[in-house]
Length: 76
Image (cartoon, rainbow, N blue to C red; front, side, top):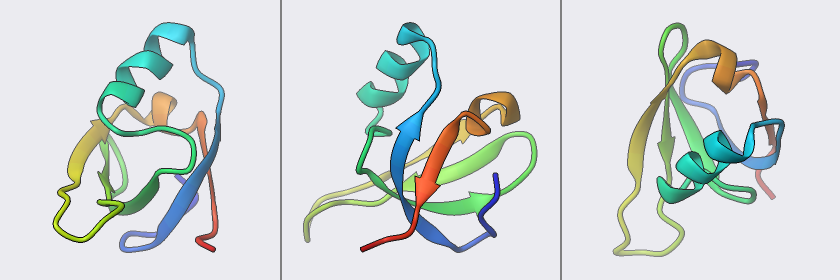
């Protein structure tokens, strides 16, 4: 929630329940995943960017309290 719309970063850590973490991992939102913020607010929409050419990413809508527990660092 600290990034601006259009900014990208890598997920470095989460503070989620096991169930929430498993659900987000199944959608590709996991540590070291590259994301781009599409929309802030409620819901916060992030795009999980494909890791390889030809792969496809997805967009995920996150409730703000959930999004606030996902820590994102700069891309390397």
